[in-house]
Length: 193
Image (cartoon, rainbow, N blue to C red; front, side, top):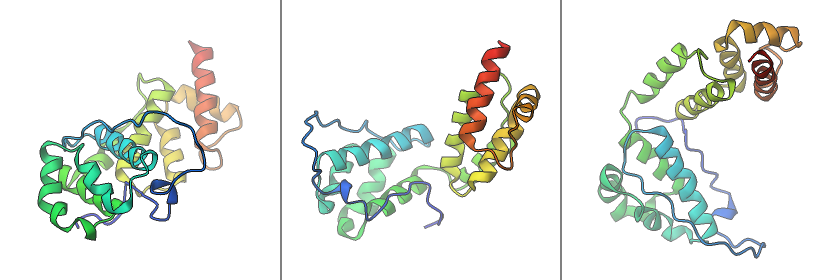
């Protein structure tokens, strides 16, 4: 295993992934969109999210979960499953599977690339919400940044005019929350447009 910090946290004690819910709501079971192993964080995290929902809502037993997910893998992602997991599937858990799938499909220096991208990231012409979404995706793929560091980066990367407005609104990067900063900055962005 080349990376030890997880960007794909799966709670092993989350009984909702494999046990029946008390709710009797009936909706069609949605299958995850196939993942081809491309090193695209949006595609990977969509597969992770949809795959977990599929297992939970389909009440798939733990011993069958990885086999079922394999039906939605193709290309490089399926090659990983076939070569690394298939014949020892009973030795794998969901957390390990998603971590190692990520490691297999993404370049070894992907985290460093994302850190460099994060360091260069500025709001520029992006709307506040778009800028915040880009940062969140980078944070999710990097996986080891504290919430305060995230808030500070959000603040420091915003346009100076928005930073001034936030200061005037009694917000600051040391004590304000992510949501407070985004909400207030969006209001100023709307007022200034």
